[in-house]
Image (cartoon, rainbow, N blue to C red; front, side, top):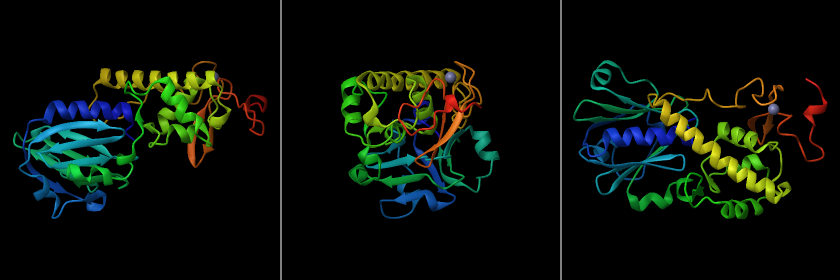
Length: 284
Ligand SMILES: [Zn+2]
């Protein structure tokens, strides 16, 4: 899925390219992902409006069109944004999984494509924002100055669940997905099945630092690569989808944590809780 570092890049590229331009045309392919919160069809709801801003909020991208229209997109697992040059837009037919397309007067097009139809595109007015699921309840943005050590410790103290589901709870922390949850726990040296209540003060401080470092470094790296926005840059990840730990050469393990697939190094992220399988003692 596009995660925070990808979405920071997407929002920047789209903002640089499209803010100030008028939406000249619009269409939907498969309307499954559309959530119309204003009356009428998609095209009349957006055509003729100028793009005022394009911002990331948590794992959503918010497009302000004119004074009173917004598109709020949650790309979920596989939603992709593409910005097509005029010649590409003219040449390339809409994919079956087109969520929506916005065409601009210079011939460029923004297309949102969602092969799994799991994403959501809310077409709304700013007054509706408080009713958009998850978006209205986003927790503290982990790239913002408000996300400091005290705030994090306070959030963690209240949790009864494991640390990985906590990291991925968008109403607590905005927003960490599967890939970066693994990277953060690796950075902090914490086993993904650790419970929040098992975290010492030091653990919590280390985990907070790991979140900030991993997310900022990834954001910088994705920006530095400057790939087209539909490309997911993931080759710099250390444990996610890896076979061997880059730090100690142990075999990276996979475990199900609350229905999610977690990758971790059994040596660098030892289990501390009794009852967990100690992978370091079971051999390969
Ligand atoms: Zn290791």
